[in-house]
Image 1 (cartoon, rainbow over the protein chains, first blue to last red):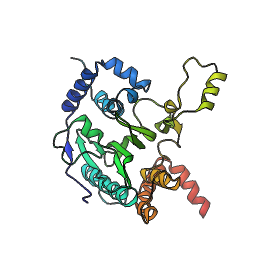
Image 2: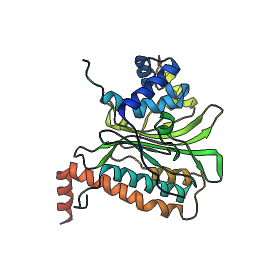
Image 3: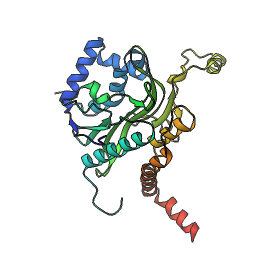
Image 4: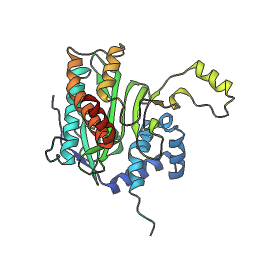
Length: 68
Length: 225
């Protein structure tokens, strides 16, 4: 049984696109996503949404580009 | 922490994944293979990311629940981390992590309980690390009734404190809990298998506490004189 495997690389732009696509599939806006995440309802909708809200979303928000 | 130059962050993340893969496979699993996904700015995801995944998807980053040996289709352990650089930039710092016991349902794997760390936002220290129990409590309903609560929280939505960020349990503690409480079977010598990495984790936490609280450290050392 191997104990390690090559790392996967992921860019912020890729993450943004993946999250946008996921929210679109669920018909959820960014504001609704925030609201559902705060009220901890995402796990009941789709565990992937719960994971994304807790793990990926803060990373994207902390790297938001300032509005032009 | 030993006076030697720290490893690059990628190497630290890979070493962490390899060590905990080893711990999981020596204690309660056979097919754990934790993998690193590297994001920009010293951010890393670690989880049971499929080794066949060559391009990132959210499903891959979330990873798969890891089957418990002997109960491969019914009991699973979930383990995920997101790391960022520490304030010095030399070490990894946990920004989010979650490990839990999961059972399969028709739709997805559902948690029984989860131990979570989340340093995003402006949460109180007690809540940065917490346990969530995915069950029901009649007594909790009574409490909300006495309080005449307009928006009562169910048990899974309560965050049970575990001592704040620095004193939180590690994966090894969680495995020990699962086996000692009879929830999952441990392999031969499972407890010894998790001691070394747990000791390293606790030493790291203690080191940071000393660095952040030098006056307490001085007083403690003076009391030994």
